[in-house]
Image 1 (cartoon, rainbow, N blue to C red):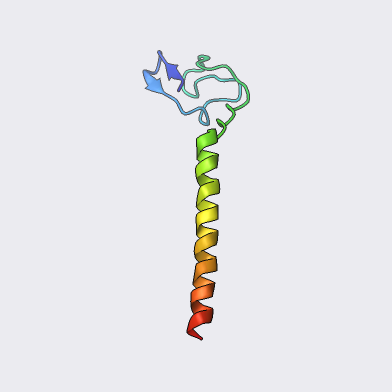
Image 2 (cartoon, rainbow, N blue to C red):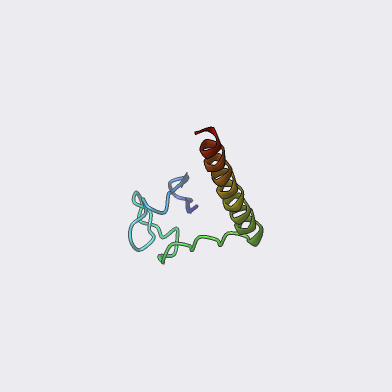
Length: 71
């Protein structure tokens, strides 16, 4: 988060001027550029989501079988 020494304040990157300068004093506090890329999801999270999808799919099949048996 950009800090302006003259204003003694942290600035949100969205509130800075397009050139990265402080909106109050005009001092450059950050380099303009593109926003940081979001980090990738780790492999074990993807594995967990896949296992959850399989489990919930199986539970739906069991629910359908249970309903068919009751009718």
